[in-house]
Structure formats: C-alpha cells, structure tokens
Image (cartoon, rainbow, N blue to C red; front, side, top):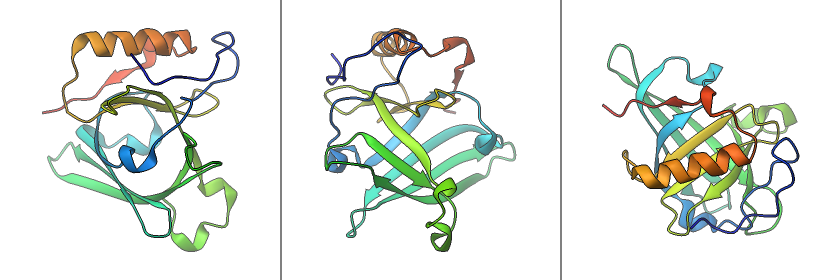
Length: 169
C-alpha cells in the first residue's frame, strides 16, 4: 500500500503529489533505483545515491553521489526547501552556490509523487514529468513493490520506456 495521494485526474492532467510528507522521516540515504536520463547525471554510470539531512534553519542538505566511468565517486552538494505547509511533499532543490539562491531559476522542483507507508520506496518528479527518479532505502527493491510502483507511475502519465535502471555494482 502506498501513502495516500491527492485525487488524480487523467494521466495527462495535473501531476499530483502524495498527500503529506514527514520531512524528518524522509531524511537519510536513498539509493537511485531508476531514473529518466538527464543532463546533470550524464557522467554517472552507477552506484547513485542521495543523502538528505535536516539543518537547524529548516533547510535540507542534499548530497548526491555516483560512480563515474573511471571508478571514482563524484558528489554534488545542494540544498532543498519545503514549499507550503510543514507536511508539504513539494520541495525545491538547488545545487548552485548559496549566493545565487535569490534567483528563482536555480531552484528545481522536487515533488514526492509516490511513497510507501514505511518510507522505503519513493518516486520523485516535477510538474512537467520531464524528470523522474525512483529511490529506495536499499540498493535492491522487492520486485513486487517495484512493479506496483511502475503501474502507479504509468497511471500518473509517465512513459516507462524512458526509465533507465541504475547499476548498483
């Protein structure tokens, strides 16, 4: 069973998020299971994960790491902020320097659109459905849970043919 979602119109309509997000519970390490390919992860060949930690000012520190072709691990450090109420599943994230934070275009939408009740498997996207990440607390996900998530994502209007499974080795 997944966390309750807002009512959903047709798959091509508005992308809805989960109803509420417990941000402190969401903190910690998340492994990338699959994603839509994107320009800012072009160098990544596997072992991609994100670490989220709550800062005293209410912001979230984001550390994304992945392995590149040479075998090295690279990282990008960013910040996220919650948009709306204290339980809002809509966040914005930036990897630009702090001194550019006042510019609206350095912030990208980070919407939690699917999340199981145990906070073990999540899907993150943005309103235009151009980006999609499937994240889990462990590098390997039970196949039934993954298949059920894919079904829900397809119902939300995502093209599953675009999904790229992340190498974990």
